Length: 345
Image 1 (cartoon, rainbow, N blue to C red):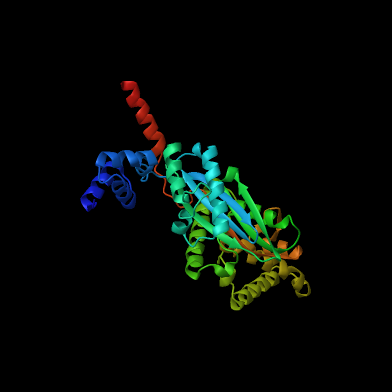
Image 2: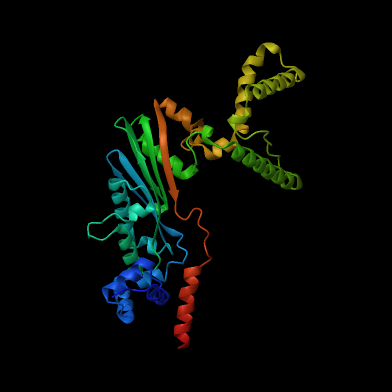
């Protein structure tokens, strides 16, 4: 029999299922509404759909390397407790593996991948939501590729809440993971400072100066030494004219201090180097190669890699829940309300 739009709407309102799931169920049972509801419940679709609007901001990252292709994924749950569930962990790992091996174009293509059980990955998420009892959501993935002369570094921190993949050319076998550990700790957003947008640099520099000035007001009240207030935030702002002006100012300072001109060449490089560090803080916060290497803060990551005859090609970093607006204790509050209602009865 023909299934009407009104029937599909009614079934969706009763179960929360999607349009296609509702229509398929009605077709399968010849339009019998009660049987369609039972069918959706059996498949777990109705139960999963009712959780669709919940906020899932906990979870895990997953990493899988398949030859010259690596996949980094983020899968969310509502609570960190469920993120330790064996079924959940297995789903995260399977998702990363399937994506690395199939190289889907986007999330929809990823969820359409057929798993070893014959179900799609999307159906596996519906089933997981139904059986685990929380909203389980596949959020995002990134594919990273390399050539035969390059090496992957894979690292997961804090039980998998942060996942990193790096691609390094040259150096020894331990270097890619060491750089991945740095990326996990320092959270760069781009490889090189040259990738930072001009407007971003300007706005972030203004915000940085404002924060330091506010901090200095507090320090003034407490008698602490003032922090240096930079003029700039990025190497992109340090043009030849700017550097020439700064060098001239340093020479005037040395002259005023009575330092002999013959020793200026020994003093100026250190002053210029410190000026560069003080005035590239936006680069250091955001660009991997500009950051001070966590295991040797006398060098930037770029200089450290150079000392190992290596270079960074690219990286990917996911941190669970970043950018998700969390509803405060939404799931915990629901559990408490359910328990309270049960006690009353």
